Image (cartoon, rainbow, N blue to C red; front, side, top):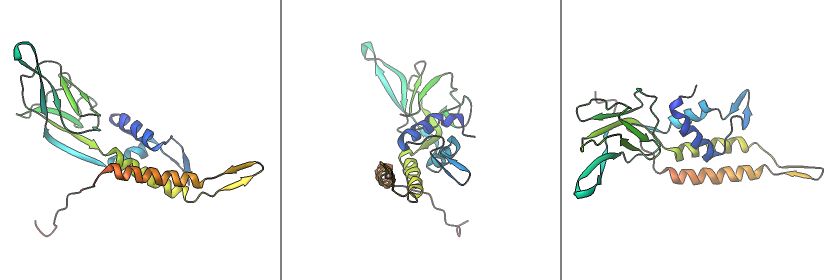
Length: 192
């Protein structure tokens, strides 16, 4: 079952890939359930551990500063479910700031505190997702499905399924370009 913390990301991915709950069936499996889209997203996930948030102070009258807004420089973050380890804001001592003290724009990675923090350092632990890479993967799978489709004509009607294949290829190429370079960490097994 898809995590409730992923609902916004799954909906964004549905929009980018034009997918419904049962676009097509292969064997006995309908495509694209929330679980299937979450699995694709999870393959394009980056774990973030104690990334320093950048404060953006607001200048008020007399030149004083107020500290409410902090930016992570990340986008498409998984939401918190109120106390889970999926999105944690901590101060420099490692103390959890608690969800009652702040709100987050998970799409832009901006954390806004309810009261002035006086410039305290805060760190973010969470998960970010490359939606463009996930969309490219879904379109790639659609290409495989549409490749088996054929054009046909009947009485006064013509169905050109080849256009679906062409469109899927175009969308795949678009999102591959938008996804940017993919990196991974490698460890040598001979050095232990």
